[in-house]
Length: 242
Image (tube, rainbow, N blue to C red; front, side):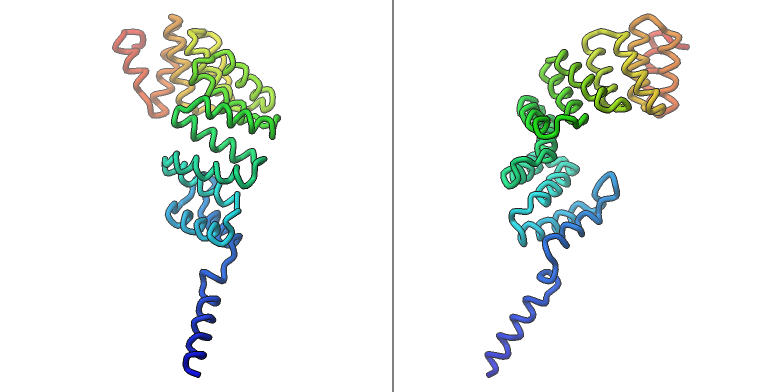
């Protein structure tokens, strides 16, 4: 009788423990409660919760993507890629997983793999502006500047106020030495986001390279007021700005 009572106690303890009372969705929600709108506030806890969700439901594709996002925040890009790949295996038409894996490939400068993932995402979500902008960055990384420009322009057509696409366009034109077009791209960034320090920096550089010291120095001064004085210091050393 004692053995039966002990066994029953162990069974009840096992099934009534906090870990077993939570469902996979509960653990997933707990992890997302740590998201503040920009990042996870406790990476270790969020991963622990998602691990629990995956243990309870091994085919939980969304949990793999969320855990991949956390690894990306932690700069553990290979781990992120592995999780996104598992999500894709479980859910082959999961556009977000392709986009996220592509971004991590691009971070690691595996641009061709990134483009392949972005192509798959575009086939699934042809009107998603962000994918074109991301693919533009990857094309630029391969030195395929015209394709990059086409993608940034496509992103802007889909989302006319897309700051990052204008910035990408400006950077690409600057790399090609097309300074006026670069200036136009950065000017759109500044119009949409007036305190975008990198846009002032690059536009100021383009003006100075054009010989337009007046506008170049104005942008260099603005960049400095926003916390980056490198351009102004270089311009003053070169006696381009007072």
